[in-house]
Image (cartoon, rainbow, N blue to C red; front, side, top):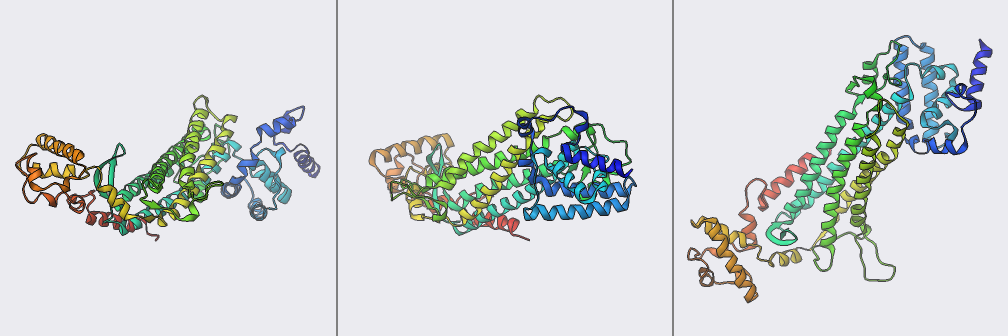
Length: 473
């Protein structure tokens, strides 16, 4: 028996393949490089160990392996964890992926107990479990980063609940709003993003382990036990689906694309606002760069790059959708290609949110420039129309009267508020001496005091609500 064990161990070490006895010639070096994933999937190592320890504990509980085997596996995995965390673990391309690298090292450390660990599972359900464990952790981090960004936006919004700037449609001056109200629009977007991520997490947090290669296993495994040990809410109910499902990864990438879309929209506004032609804000120097030839330049590189990285994240989503669209059941080697785009998406979103939460807090607001812009473009024209409606004028008639007034102001080169009551009455007889109260910027924003409106008091209430939701507990 001893000689057989030594022979088996020697064969594993010599050919470095879990399936080497099946083949009559070695894999070429080019094919090894082409098919190997260890260079990128080694980031799953600690999650692979976490899943393996839970699997081993379950195997011992159902008497498939001895308690001594479990103790040896725990001891070996503790050393491997230490080696990985200290950078001393040797990753071998010949072993193809993170799973076989860890298994080989475990066998070196604890012998037969390491060989017994893979009983009742396959790399197919193993990798699906690892990805879900890793992605669950990433989602938790992203939700917290979204919370931090919303907190930063709400803090600035509270400080600028009364700072007026023009609201735009079609990039044309539309109506006055407050800067706080404008920022809280993005806080709403990122709140939806956090809710989407939390919802996505519920489908990520289902355990595939136990599906084995595709059909389940003949061993008396206890899948609910493993799910409980790993903090999963449930187990996958179909073994074929369990190993081949990547819907949860696609869903994460879709939610991430929406986050980056919101980041990109915000970036576009920051870039426009920072332009000297607009001059609404300035960004802290640490988020900008200069020019190699023009010494006066201060470029908003961080928002520009984030705007560009949105295309990268969108591309990862399309890549994953395309990867899955033609695959028959169950697991296929194609699925090795699910990781790099998924990893890149998580890294990009995490880094972007971290930077933006810091950057928002350092925005310097140029309120005078905002106010001056709000005085251009007849921003209170709708207020004048509303004023007439409240005097009993049908809205369409009021709209037409104000349009004539705006055209007259364009000819004269003045604003509606610059016209006297007598001049305004020529456009409609219902206009009275109280008209200028509605033509001021402050009067305009204050009048919109319903829930969701831009009135300063409503902005303060909304900002406080967001701050209470996002304060660290």
